[in-house]
Length: 146
Image (cartoon, rainbow, N blue to C red; front, side, top):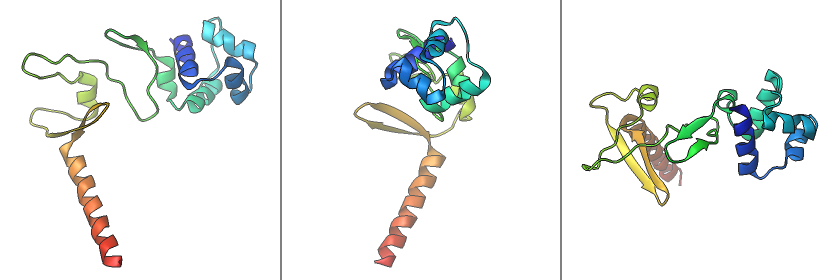
């Protein structure tokens, strides 16, 4: 798990083993052993690795898998990869249980559907509406100041 994540994260960010080893204060050989699974870092080095890669220690230690993709790299800190869903014939999807639990998505909960060229995002309507209200208030204050 850890070894797979270290390889994926390093390659995704374009670092060499030597560059990462230097950033966390170890030898390239020691880092290579972590990537091969021959040894594992202590908790302090795990914290350094997580900070270097911009992920949590927890996500660094777990390997996530997605249907059709296999192992996927840990998501950046504060972000989540919930897996994949399949759109049914009526255009519906089932949001993974862990995501429903995290965001308290229960029957009747309103979501705003947003998108850009790369995909779709779902945001709780209350949060979206609060943010829009705050942006409108700031716009009014800025207009009044001019």
